[in-house]
Amino acid sequence: MLENLEADFVSRKKVFGLPLLHISSKTARGVVAVGERAYGVVAVGKLAVGVIATGAVSLGVLAAGAISVGLAAASGAVALSLGRASGAIAAGSRASGALALGRRVEGPITFRLPECEPKAVIEEYEEKIYD
Image: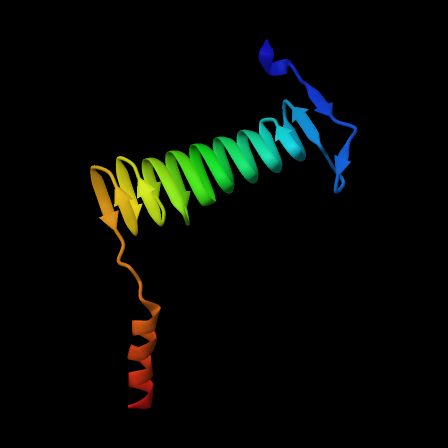
């Protein structure tokens, strides 16, 4: 019964050609987007893509959801990030969770990546080149 229900709201205000608010039962695109598939600065949906994204599957700078991929931070059951990651399975520069992978990790099962020192690597290659 609810599967056939369709809703769509698009605000009249526009920012850079995008509606300020778009709420849809299917795909939403706007500064603030809410829908099954949401694309925007702030996105909320089953699939959310945006600067701040939350949903079942979320991709963004800051992401939260069941499966989340974030540039700066991610939180969820499975969280992947270049920065901070927190979740049951977490991978990132700073990771915390039941299974954590990263440079600085916290949790019962951890995989610590070695700290990289580019200066030492460069000096090693310079010695090989100039010798």
